Length: 112
Image 1 (cartoon, rainbow, N blue to C red):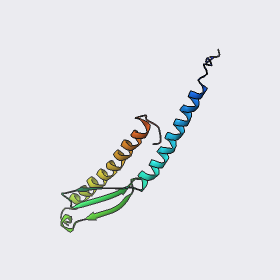
Image 2: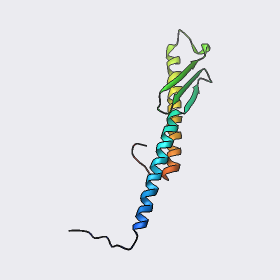
Image 3: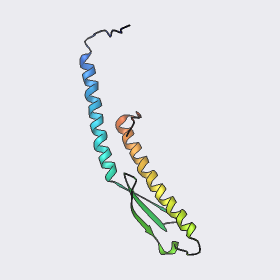
Image 4: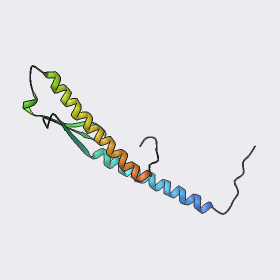
């Protein structure tokens, strides 16, 4: 069974929608490239640890205050580093989600 869509002269409307979708895709690509170059920093332990990641979620910098180094408690240092890195990654992801959402109007588009 074939479905026939009536021709109501709305072809221009479809072209306009396609142009808008293409513009949205272009805007998203530009934003994605911009987001990947940004850096996101987070701290833990009251500033003893500072982690910076880029928009690709790769660690760019890790600063460890000497006061955070206790040879008797390496586990605490590991935990502080983990917290700071994870928070920086979450900041990058949240920023990307918010800014992409502004372009897409909240549409969930796979890959972005």
